[in-house]
Amino acid sequence: MLKVGLTGNIGCGKSTVASMFRELGAYVFDADIIIRGFYEEKGEVYKKVVEAFGSAVLDQEGNIDRKKLAQIVFSDKEKLRVLEEITHNALYKRLDEEFKKLPQNAIAIVEASLLVEKGTYKNYDKLIVVYAPYQVCKERALKSGFSEEDFERRWKHQLPPEEKVKHAHFIIDNSDGLEHTKRQVIKVYEELLNLVR
Image (cartoon, rainbow, N blue to C red; front, side, top):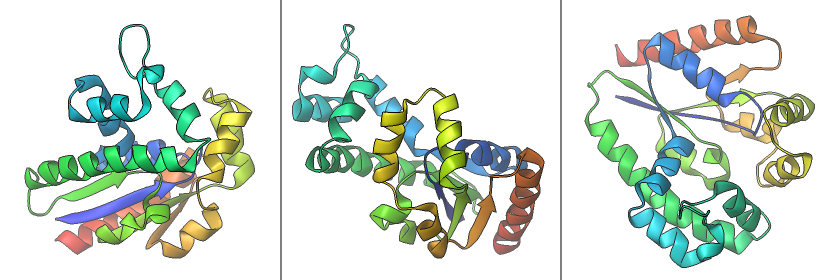
């Protein structure tokens, strides 16, 4: 099995690229969706988050309000570290369980934002970085509902895209229309297939 990390900055179009890989036959895991699932399960991760941050992060139904949580952690480095420790440990455990279920020649792609920042890209056989320049990322993020302040706060916690691409085995430039992106995705997928054949 080939383990591939897929990363890029907020607004670069990681999810779009991930879904293209999924259509081609890769097994794609979205770190954010898995972590959201932990909150919804109200199991151990939920309990630890509420213990660490208190009931201020809950909505009226007792669910973790991810917007409130983001506001708290993105304005305090130590709190962000605590949250990442809780969620990332559970995430890696879950991914290992999922990987065990896959066929031997599978291409498993994990979509996550901070692979380079955290150094966890080293746990993967290959790293794909989705690239788009700052202005393009910002426009897309604002269109998708982020406030300017929220975008800037998250952007500051991520390395500039120009730094990320230095660690990449493959770069997908997603700044110039979907057709252009799709052609690159197909090319990269063919190269990945050659590695598991």
